[in-house]
Length: 510
Image (cartoon, rainbow, N blue to C red; front, side):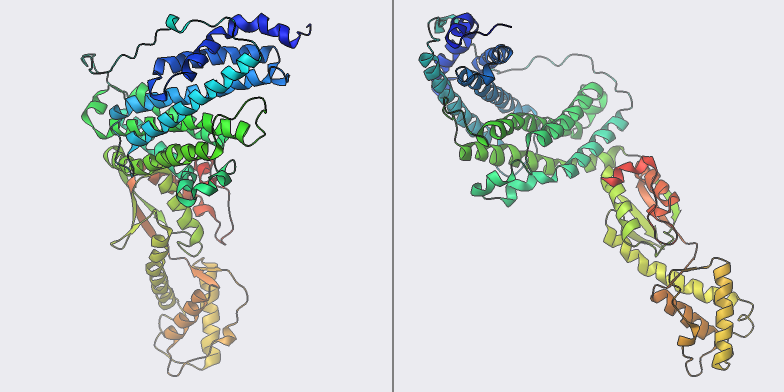
């Protein structure tokens, strides 16, 4: 390819830049509140076309033409954001938005106006560059552009036949579950609560960055797409008002995230690096960060939080309820690992699941609640010790008898070894000696054996295999995974060592 001289390139490309230059000139002379949405859409188109053309000729690496290329990037970024915000502002009333702290409509209007002012300023900066580079010889007259702003003051009849959704209950449950999972994954959005305005810069790019936001925005877009494909205009969406409301929250969250991606990209690419000295910055970092954090991130977080209870109600309505009975964890009952894994399964699905033990109900989504069940399970183990001891052939006929300490300890050792052989007892610590246990005055054989075994149980040196089971009640999807977890030893072997879980539970690794 041949090298094009800088100034010669101007006359070569000027006709392709004509509409972008003319629209920028027009916008630079308008009051921000007089810029119609369709004008923003047109300059977004022209800026995108010019950016691609300039890139093809290598303008980003050319000192003379880099300011023009930068101007197209600024126009493209802010026109895209502003166009999206026009959409949010005009569509918000149809989203069935839940109540959150702050006036979302007013905040949208104020942020939109602030960005329109930036747009006007940026357009003015670009026109200065155009004049300096003598590119304004062929402007398109403003009268040639027509931008109608048709008011939306009515609705067409909703007379299209409703479709019958296939497996609508499953789709509703999937959407509610997926939203709750996404809410858990993007809990970092609450950064707006933790920082003061002077600290906003500290969260970019470590907490808030373009890649992370784009990933989450795509996830919410997928939910919106799934709803529109399988539930929109269906019988079930018409009969259950919660479903359209859920769709509205998914949509507003998606649009907020999808739009702020561009602003964060702009901040990371241009504001964090040295601004091209040939082109003035169109917005101060403080103002840009305030819009990013106080409007986009804050309201995204608020709507995500507000929608979680709605999703739980959808799950209550559509999730199939069931009941399973599973054995208690082999190693020390419901201690940290099994209790945490059970809670993570429940949180993953967002449903309510209860554990039932001897008439007592526990909230299985809370590990501390499951820990509490160990009190009852330990009592069962103590009762099992009594039964095992009294049923043993060396004790059964002489339970109430008292002997000298050496004989009592020999019987204890024999009983202990028999229970161990029959797998009624699990040993975790070999460092124990029956000689350390002193005989109490007037203590019977049964009392002595029970006390000794319970003592080792309390010290954590052994565990009692009681064969007890517990009952879980709730969402059948959750119960299926809890059953899989129980079949896998609740993630540990009988000695408390970690074991690999089945692939179906791979989400627990997150």
